[in-house]
Image 1 (cartoon, one colour):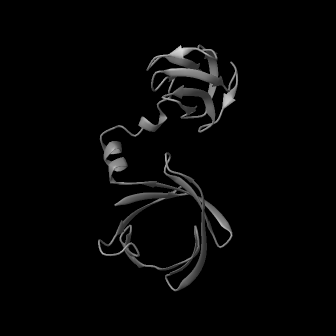
Image 2: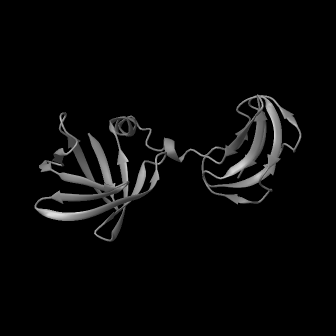
Image 3: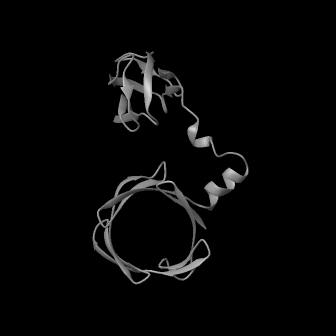
Length: 168
């Protein structure tokens, strides 16, 4: 069972165990005829209507995707059974917890610091390059953040869990 939010409207979708093209949307049965035209682009027949569907901007962490249906863009967010269980248990805001520090995930040498205090960094952007076991590792922002303080410096050896950067 999946909860799917399209723009601001929510649906419950359950797929037939034998096929990912049959199932129920809320209480209504559905049967899709789906043909992949090219990667992330499909032709779909649903309720005797034809749709051209393109999937883009896939964010696996947030479980969000932009779906263009017949040239109209829709923001789609998908929650699986595990997400729904967490919500029932009162953990629906777990995604909103902000990380306050960037810590070294392993011992290593700070090769490069790619940010300055006061910088606004987007989720997924590189912040620090850490060399460990003769490999360079890009440490990335796990969320949109503002750099509060750069604690480490280029050329410094760090231990696992040492705080490198703090966020506002």
